[in-house]
Length: 114
Image 1: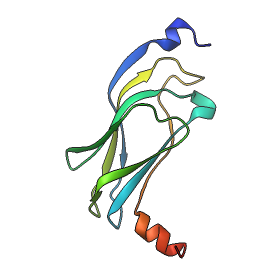
Image 2: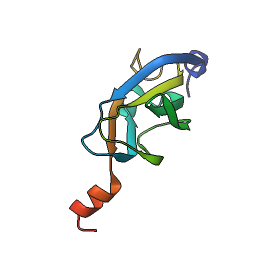
Image 3: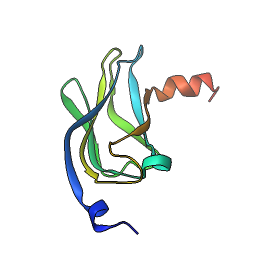
C-alpha cells in the first residue's frame, strides 16, 4: 500500500520526451514506463506531432500502444507530454520511461510475412 505522500498527484506539466522523426510515416506509438525500478507513475499524458495533439491517455504502466488517428508523416517528431504523475513512486525521484518507439504497422506486417 502506498503512503499518503506517494498517492499525491503532482502537476508534471512540461515533463516531455521527444521521439525523433522516423524515415517513414508512422501510425502507432509504443510507450513503456520503467515499472520494475520506478513503479507506475504517469496518470495523464498526451502525444503530439507538429503542434497538434494526436491522442490523450491516463496511465501507461508496463506497456501501452496507441494507434494514431492518422499517420504521422516521415521526418515529423512525436512528443510525449506528461501532464500528471504520482509523487515519490518506487525508488525514483524523476519520471523514467523504459521505451518510447513509433512504427508503421503495414511495414512491420510485411516484414513478418503477414
